[in-house]
Amino acid sequence: MSQHLLNNRREWLKLSAMLTAGGALPLLQTFNASASTDANAPVRIGYLPITDATPLLVAHHNKTYEAQGLAVEPPRMFRSWAQLVEAFIAGQVNVVHLLSPITVWARYGSKVPAKVVAWNHVGGSALTVAPEINEVKQLGGKTVAVPFWYSMHNVVLQHLLRKGALEAITKGTPTASQVKLVVMPPSDMTPALASKQIAGFIVAEPFNAGAELLKVGKVLRFTGDVWKNHACCVVFMHERDLNQRPDWSQKVVNSVVQAQLWTQNNRAATARLLAKDGPNRYTPHNAETLLRVLEPNAEQAKQYQASGAIRHPEWNEERIDFQPYPFPSYTEKMVELLKITKVEGDNGFITALDAKKTASDLVDDRFVKKAIQQAGGLKAFGFPESFGRTEVFGG
View: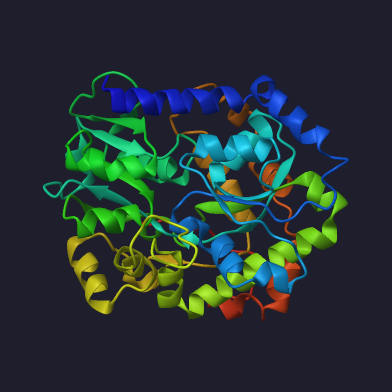
């Protein structure tokens, strides 16, 4: 195993140990010890430098939190999900975006008292492959990187592999009918693809756009073209704040929802403020890469339809879009799919989960419903005015 993949595996093992009831206990004890002194804690944002974090960062840049009367610290950027989860469990940050399946693992695998309060975005991810690969079946016998076992990326990728009669494996050398999956931080994926260490990766933007612009990879499928308007990252907050500081929590969610609406109407400005030369240097990405994600042109859409990266133009999916309501049907479907998605580590807790009960228990939608109403309803985001829907999958 190369040093590169060895380091990634160590990162995974670190998080695996942390996201168990025993492994999380010391961090939770640290969190609980701060209860008496943290009653007036400011908004402490934790994020990875991906477009999934956009609403949290836009709200900070636009001083939306302050407009709600909240004190807020400068957002803290983390390089990996392991670092972000560790900081959240210990209470170093109190408002984070997490891959939606990680929240399932955190709440039920390690008993972290926290809940999903809103979606951060919809879509915003893609399967990017080496230039010579034109269909999923050509990934047979090759290695593909995912950002985390408990990720929507792993769920969607394995759905595509099953459709292509390919088996996902996590160890050993893949046969022609198998695809080996490895966990890799998003920032490492493009270099690994360029050096042919992997044949592809599935991850959040703007790493797919970055690989395109560097001409080391191409988008094979957009995840939003596989699962219509699916969530990827969600806003996760401590139950202690939700229960003991409901006014504070409402203002946090109000800020995130307002930032999503602003982003929808100011996509180019959002790309510039997130860029590495923006006033807050939120991400290491240039504006050109971010604009390709946030404000793609019509010519790009035609090219993706011609290549098959987009097979459902009638869905009118944006490359990344913003809608805050956490639909219960999505959480139910996610839990069902997690039960048939291969991961490393002990996932026995997943088999015991009831999808409907999990959707009700994992999510606290009290705050986001009020925030959406104040923002003009779901129609203000370009979505049907309903808190119920049917999940739609495409081939």
